[in-house]
Length: 294
Image (cartoon, rainbow, N blue to C red; front, side):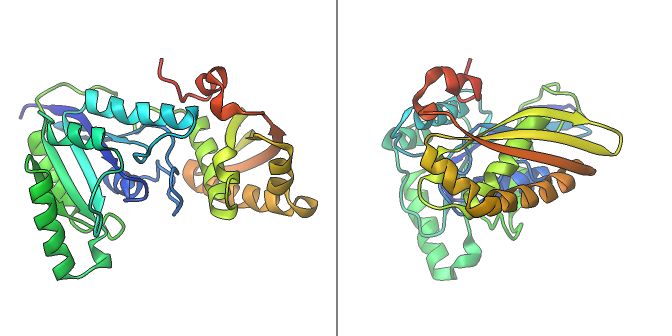
């Protein structure tokens, strides 16, 4: 049988379940998931291999109207997802009626590649709501095949994956067959720490934070990690640390547990907080953190 391989890119509004779907496909927790918008900042690849196929999945940031340079760079990741896709997955949630950016929507409806429109979170509604959604999206995106799924409950996910395999072109693999993602270990350390901050802090704090893992030493039974949590202002640093360091300690403890599960061995994690003023609008800093594409 001929070998198939291709790029399958997931796009949609914030919080529609793109990261949950990506993780369901890959069978690993590559993308962090919280209830807050803009949880995903990067374009993250997850690679699913079989004897005669390689599916290179891409999770992208939720589509927003950018307010500062970091968000503009995040939307560049979404634009790039249109450029190299062999199959496009447009994810909406039950009850949603439009995309937040009309230009992106036009790209979807005018796409010359296969588009699978996935109505997610159908476990949150009833048959009447689903019928209305199917009718709405068939009219709005006539070039798409429509699937009703629940990524969280893993309902309908296998059917979508089977259809993806049918649509992929014949090609040799793009990555080694034992490779799971294009990101290094330090990236996942940063993401897991950032996830805990998204979970436990409110307002602007989670969006002003960037993680820089300065040290990652892997021994036979232990990984030693030193990560710096950067904020934009001194007041944010105080909030992040909390009274007598209690708040940042909770972040460290929870992140360490997830890191041990992710890497499958004991982790020693040290976290520090420092101020890096206006990093979200600084092109040099954004390049350093991997937000600007080369």
